[in-house]
Image (tube, rainbow, N blue to C red):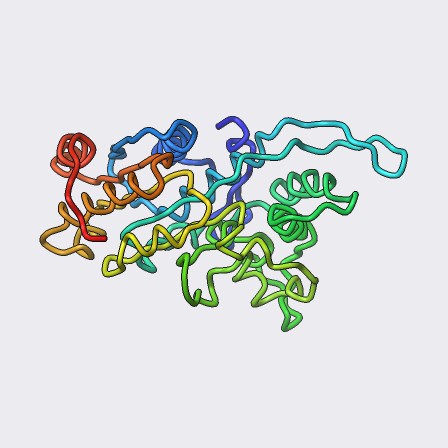
Length: 297
Protein backbone atom coordinates (compact mmCIF):
# COMPACT_ATOMS: atom_id res chain seq x y z
CA UNK A 1 0.00 0.00 0.00
CA UNK A 2 2.96 2.32 0.52
CA UNK A 3 3.91 1.88 -3.13
CA UNK A 4 0.36 2.69 -4.21
CA UNK A 5 0.29 5.79 -2.02
CA UNK A 6 3.31 7.07 -3.91
CA UNK A 7 1.48 7.06 -7.26
CA UNK A 8 -0.23 10.43 -7.86
CA UNK A 9 -3.81 10.38 -9.17
CA UNK A 10 -5.94 13.13 -10.71
CA UNK A 11 -9.60 13.73 -11.30
CA UNK A 12 -10.24 13.65 -15.03
CA UNK A 13 -8.90 16.84 -16.59
CA UNK A 14 -7.63 18.32 -13.32
CA UNK A 15 -3.96 19.08 -12.66
CA UNK A 16 -4.43 18.77 -8.90
CA UNK A 17 -3.28 15.52 -7.33
CA UNK A 18 -5.77 13.59 -5.19
CA UNK A 19 -5.22 10.85 -2.63
CA UNK A 20 -6.82 7.45 -2.55
CA UNK A 21 -9.84 7.36 -0.25
CA UNK A 22 -9.72 5.13 2.87
CA UNK A 23 -12.53 3.03 1.39
CA UNK A 24 -10.51 2.22 -1.73
CA UNK A 25 -7.38 1.64 0.31
CA UNK A 26 -9.31 -1.04 2.19
CA UNK A 27 -10.73 -2.54 -1.01
CA UNK A 28 -7.29 -2.81 -2.61
CA UNK A 29 -5.73 -4.19 0.57
CA UNK A 30 -8.40 -6.88 0.81
CA UNK A 31 -7.99 -7.74 -2.87
CA UNK A 32 -4.25 -8.15 -2.32
CA UNK A 33 -4.84 -10.38 0.70
CA UNK A 34 -7.24 -12.80 -0.99
CA UNK A 35 -5.11 -12.90 -4.14
CA UNK A 36 -2.00 -13.79 -2.17
CA UNK A 37 -3.43 -16.51 0.07
CA UNK A 38 -6.53 -17.76 -1.72
CA UNK A 39 -8.86 -16.75 1.10
CA UNK A 40 -12.34 -15.21 0.89
CA UNK A 41 -13.52 -11.88 2.28
CA UNK A 42 -16.70 -9.83 2.24
CA UNK A 43 -16.16 -6.07 2.16
CA UNK A 44 -18.73 -3.34 2.85
CA UNK A 45 -17.14 0.12 2.78
CA UNK A 46 -18.44 2.56 5.35
CA UNK A 47 -19.57 5.21 4.77
CA UNK A 48 -21.07 3.72 1.60
CA UNK A 49 -19.17 4.42 -1.61
CA UNK A 50 -19.61 3.40 -5.23
CA UNK A 51 -17.30 0.49 -5.94
CA UNK A 52 -15.64 -0.16 -9.29
CA UNK A 53 -14.12 -3.63 -9.80
CA UNK A 54 -12.10 -2.19 -12.68
CA UNK A 55 -10.61 0.46 -10.39
CA UNK A 56 -9.78 -2.15 -7.74
CA UNK A 57 -7.89 -4.35 -10.22
CA UNK A 58 -6.05 -1.42 -11.80
CA UNK A 59 -4.98 -0.06 -8.40
CA UNK A 60 -3.91 -3.55 -7.31
CA UNK A 61 -1.79 -3.84 -10.47
CA UNK A 62 -0.17 -0.45 -9.82
CA UNK A 63 0.62 -1.53 -6.26
CA UNK A 64 2.13 -4.85 -7.39
CA UNK A 65 4.31 -3.29 -10.08
CA UNK A 66 5.44 -0.33 -7.96
CA UNK A 67 6.33 -2.52 -4.97
CA UNK A 68 8.68 -4.82 -6.92
CA UNK A 69 12.13 -4.69 -5.38
CA UNK A 70 14.73 -2.50 -7.14
CA UNK A 71 17.70 -4.34 -8.59
CA UNK A 72 20.87 -3.29 -10.36
CA UNK A 73 21.43 -4.69 -13.85
CA UNK A 74 24.13 -4.21 -16.47
CA UNK A 75 23.19 -2.60 -19.77
CA UNK A 76 26.01 -2.21 -22.30
CA UNK A 77 28.64 -2.47 -19.57
CA UNK A 78 26.92 0.17 -17.44
CA UNK A 79 24.98 -0.38 -14.21
CA UNK A 80 21.36 0.70 -14.26
CA UNK A 81 18.42 0.51 -11.84
CA UNK A 82 15.70 -1.97 -12.77
CA UNK A 83 13.09 -3.96 -10.85
CA UNK A 84 12.50 -7.60 -10.06
CA UNK A 85 9.53 -9.14 -11.83
CA UNK A 86 6.30 -8.08 -10.15
CA UNK A 87 3.46 -10.38 -9.18
CA UNK A 88 0.92 -10.89 -11.95
CA UNK A 89 -2.64 -9.65 -11.37
CA UNK A 90 -5.37 -11.62 -13.11
CA UNK A 91 -8.91 -11.19 -11.82
CA UNK A 92 -12.45 -12.27 -12.70
CA UNK A 93 -15.42 -9.96 -12.18
CA UNK A 94 -19.02 -11.22 -11.96
CA UNK A 95 -21.67 -10.11 -12.81
CA UNK A 96 -20.03 -7.80 -15.33
CA UNK A 97 -21.60 -4.75 -16.99
CA UNK A 98 -20.26 -1.53 -18.48
CA UNK A 99 -20.96 0.28 -15.20
CA UNK A 100 -18.11 -1.80 -13.75
CA UNK A 101 -15.78 0.81 -15.24
CA UNK A 102 -17.60 4.03 -14.32
CA UNK A 103 -15.45 5.32 -11.45
CA UNK A 104 -12.21 4.10 -13.07
CA UNK A 105 -12.89 6.28 -16.11
CA UNK A 106 -13.11 9.45 -14.02
CA UNK A 107 -9.59 9.12 -12.56
CA UNK A 108 -6.24 9.68 -14.27
CA UNK A 109 -2.97 8.05 -13.27
CA UNK A 110 -0.04 10.47 -13.29
CA UNK A 111 2.12 9.66 -16.31
CA UNK A 112 5.42 10.44 -14.63
CA UNK A 113 5.12 7.94 -11.80
CA UNK A 114 3.57 5.06 -13.70
CA UNK A 115 5.74 5.60 -16.77
CA UNK A 116 9.03 5.60 -14.89
CA UNK A 117 8.20 2.45 -12.93
CA UNK A 118 7.30 0.56 -16.10
CA UNK A 119 10.44 1.82 -17.82
CA UNK A 120 12.49 0.37 -14.94
CA UNK A 121 10.76 -2.98 -15.46
CA UNK A 122 11.27 -2.79 -19.22
CA UNK A 123 15.05 -2.64 -18.77
CA UNK A 124 15.03 -6.33 -17.79
CA UNK A 125 14.09 -7.21 -21.35
CA UNK A 126 16.85 -5.35 -23.18
CA UNK A 127 18.75 -8.61 -23.60
CA UNK A 128 16.12 -9.84 -26.05
CA UNK A 129 13.79 -11.80 -23.76
CA UNK A 130 10.10 -11.33 -24.54
CA UNK A 131 6.80 -12.25 -22.91
CA UNK A 132 3.40 -10.71 -22.20
CA UNK A 133 4.79 -8.72 -19.28
CA UNK A 134 7.32 -7.08 -21.60
CA UNK A 135 4.55 -5.87 -23.89
CA UNK A 136 2.67 -4.56 -20.86
CA UNK A 137 5.64 -2.62 -19.51
CA UNK A 138 6.63 -1.39 -22.98
CA UNK A 139 3.22 0.15 -23.62
CA UNK A 140 2.87 1.79 -20.22
CA UNK A 141 6.45 3.09 -20.23
CA UNK A 142 5.46 5.21 -23.22
CA UNK A 143 3.00 7.30 -21.22
CA UNK A 144 6.00 9.28 -19.94
CA UNK A 145 5.97 11.05 -23.31
CA UNK A 146 2.33 12.13 -23.19
CA UNK A 147 1.82 15.89 -23.26
CA UNK A 148 -1.92 16.21 -23.68
CA UNK A 149 -1.49 16.84 -27.42
CA UNK A 150 -4.20 14.93 -29.29
CA UNK A 151 -4.24 13.74 -32.88
CA UNK A 152 -6.10 16.90 -33.94
CA UNK A 153 -3.12 19.02 -32.83
CA UNK A 154 -4.87 20.52 -29.82
CA UNK A 155 -3.91 20.14 -26.16
CA UNK A 156 -6.34 18.52 -23.72
CA UNK A 157 -5.75 18.07 -19.99
CA UNK A 158 -7.76 14.83 -20.06
CA UNK A 159 -5.16 13.26 -22.38
CA UNK A 160 -2.05 14.29 -20.46
CA UNK A 161 -2.33 11.17 -18.28
CA UNK A 162 -3.94 7.76 -18.90
CA UNK A 163 -7.16 6.94 -17.10
CA UNK A 164 -7.28 4.24 -14.44
CA UNK A 165 -9.60 2.03 -16.50
CA UNK A 166 -7.08 1.55 -19.33
CA UNK A 167 -4.18 0.44 -17.10
CA UNK A 168 -5.39 -3.19 -17.21
CA UNK A 169 -7.01 -4.75 -20.32
CA UNK A 170 -10.31 -6.55 -19.88
CA UNK A 171 -12.72 -8.80 -21.69
CA UNK A 172 -14.13 -12.33 -21.77
CA UNK A 173 -11.81 -15.31 -21.87
CA UNK A 174 -13.49 -16.53 -25.05
CA UNK A 175 -14.81 -14.80 -28.14
CA UNK A 176 -14.61 -11.21 -29.29
CA UNK A 177 -13.58 -8.36 -27.05
CA UNK A 178 -14.88 -4.78 -27.23
CA UNK A 179 -12.71 -2.11 -28.83
CA UNK A 180 -12.47 -0.19 -25.55
CA UNK A 181 -10.92 -3.08 -23.66
CA UNK A 182 -7.27 -3.08 -24.70
CA UNK A 183 -4.33 -1.58 -22.87
CA UNK A 184 -4.42 2.25 -23.15
CA UNK A 185 -7.56 1.98 -25.30
CA UNK A 186 -8.64 5.58 -24.67
CA UNK A 187 -5.22 7.18 -24.99
CA UNK A 188 -4.46 5.23 -28.16
CA UNK A 189 -7.69 6.44 -29.79
CA UNK A 190 -6.82 10.13 -29.41
CA UNK A 191 -3.02 10.42 -29.44
CA UNK A 192 -0.09 9.24 -31.55
CA UNK A 193 0.89 6.63 -28.96
CA UNK A 194 -0.98 4.12 -31.14
CA UNK A 195 1.67 4.48 -33.88
CA UNK A 196 4.28 2.65 -31.80
CA UNK A 197 4.77 -1.02 -32.59
CA UNK A 198 4.04 -3.70 -30.01
CA UNK A 199 3.43 -7.45 -29.85
CA UNK A 200 -0.08 -7.18 -28.41
CA UNK A 201 0.56 -10.04 -25.97
CA UNK A 202 -0.59 -7.94 -23.02
CA UNK A 203 -4.12 -7.85 -24.50
CA UNK A 204 -4.30 -11.60 -25.09
CA UNK A 205 -6.41 -13.18 -22.32
CA UNK A 206 -4.65 -16.52 -22.77
CA UNK A 207 -1.25 -15.32 -21.57
CA UNK A 208 -1.62 -11.73 -20.30
CA UNK A 209 0.13 -11.01 -17.02
CA UNK A 210 -2.41 -8.37 -16.01
CA UNK A 211 -6.01 -8.91 -17.05
CA UNK A 212 -9.62 -8.49 -15.89
CA UNK A 213 -11.81 -11.35 -17.12
CA UNK A 214 -15.45 -10.35 -17.50
CA UNK A 215 -18.37 -12.74 -16.98
CA UNK A 216 -21.92 -11.48 -17.43
CA UNK A 217 -25.00 -12.55 -15.53
CA UNK A 218 -26.34 -14.72 -18.36
CA UNK A 219 -23.09 -16.47 -19.24
CA UNK A 220 -22.44 -20.18 -18.68
CA UNK A 221 -20.15 -19.99 -15.70
CA UNK A 222 -18.31 -23.28 -16.15
CA UNK A 223 -17.55 -22.61 -19.80
CA UNK A 224 -16.28 -19.10 -19.11
CA UNK A 225 -14.10 -20.11 -16.19
CA UNK A 226 -12.64 -23.09 -18.04
CA UNK A 227 -11.80 -20.72 -20.87
CA UNK A 228 -9.29 -19.04 -18.55
CA UNK A 229 -6.27 -21.20 -19.19
CA UNK A 230 -4.05 -19.69 -16.48
CA UNK A 231 -5.61 -19.65 -13.04
CA UNK A 232 -6.75 -16.16 -11.99
CA UNK A 233 -5.60 -14.67 -8.70
CA UNK A 234 -9.02 -13.64 -7.48
CA UNK A 235 -12.73 -13.42 -8.17
CA UNK A 236 -14.46 -10.11 -7.50
CA UNK A 237 -18.09 -10.98 -6.82
CA UNK A 238 -20.04 -7.74 -7.06
CA UNK A 239 -23.14 -7.86 -4.85
CA UNK A 240 -23.89 -4.16 -4.81
CA UNK A 241 -27.53 -3.29 -5.37
CA UNK A 242 -26.96 -2.56 -9.05
CA UNK A 243 -25.16 -5.88 -9.55
CA UNK A 244 -27.86 -7.81 -7.66
CA UNK A 245 -30.43 -6.31 -10.00
CA UNK A 246 -28.47 -7.77 -12.92
CA UNK A 247 -28.70 -11.23 -11.37
CA UNK A 248 -32.43 -10.90 -10.68
CA UNK A 249 -34.59 -11.91 -7.74
CA UNK A 250 -32.68 -15.19 -7.37
CA UNK A 251 -29.32 -13.40 -7.05
CA UNK A 252 -28.28 -15.43 -4.02
CA UNK A 253 -28.41 -18.69 -5.97
CA UNK A 254 -26.54 -17.20 -8.94
CA UNK A 255 -23.84 -15.83 -6.65
CA UNK A 256 -23.56 -19.22 -4.96
CA UNK A 257 -23.25 -20.93 -8.34
CA UNK A 258 -20.33 -18.69 -9.22
CA UNK A 259 -18.50 -19.31 -5.95
CA UNK A 260 -18.89 -23.07 -6.20
CA UNK A 261 -17.86 -23.12 -9.84
CA UNK A 262 -14.81 -20.96 -9.15
CA UNK A 263 -13.75 -23.23 -6.29
CA UNK A 264 -14.08 -26.24 -8.57
CA UNK A 265 -12.36 -24.86 -11.70
CA UNK A 266 -9.79 -22.54 -10.09
CA UNK A 267 -9.54 -23.61 -6.45
CA UNK A 268 -6.47 -21.46 -5.68
CA UNK A 269 -8.18 -18.16 -6.54
CA UNK A 270 -9.16 -15.83 -3.73
CA UNK A 271 -12.69 -14.46 -3.49
CA UNK A 272 -13.57 -10.84 -2.73
CA UNK A 273 -17.28 -10.13 -2.28
CA UNK A 274 -18.44 -6.51 -2.53
CA UNK A 275 -21.52 -5.57 -0.50
CA UNK A 276 -23.19 -2.21 0.02
CA UNK A 277 -25.69 -2.92 2.81
CA UNK A 278 -25.56 -4.84 6.12
CA UNK A 279 -28.08 -7.51 5.09
CA UNK A 280 -26.16 -8.44 1.93
CA UNK A 281 -22.91 -8.36 3.92
CA UNK A 282 -24.21 -10.88 6.48
CA UNK A 283 -25.85 -13.04 3.82
CA UNK A 284 -22.62 -13.25 1.85
CA UNK A 285 -20.56 -14.10 4.93
CA UNK A 286 -22.74 -16.90 6.25
CA UNK A 287 -24.76 -18.24 3.33
CA UNK A 288 -22.36 -17.81 0.42
CA UNK A 289 -18.92 -18.27 1.92
CA UNK A 290 -19.97 -20.55 4.74
CA UNK A 291 -21.77 -23.21 2.70
CA UNK A 292 -21.61 -24.74 -0.74
CA UNK A 293 -24.36 -24.28 -3.30
CA UNK A 294 -25.30 -26.52 -6.19
CA UNK A 295 -24.88 -24.85 -9.55
CA UNK A 296 -25.20 -25.19 -13.27
CA UNK A 297 -22.15 -26.14 -15.30
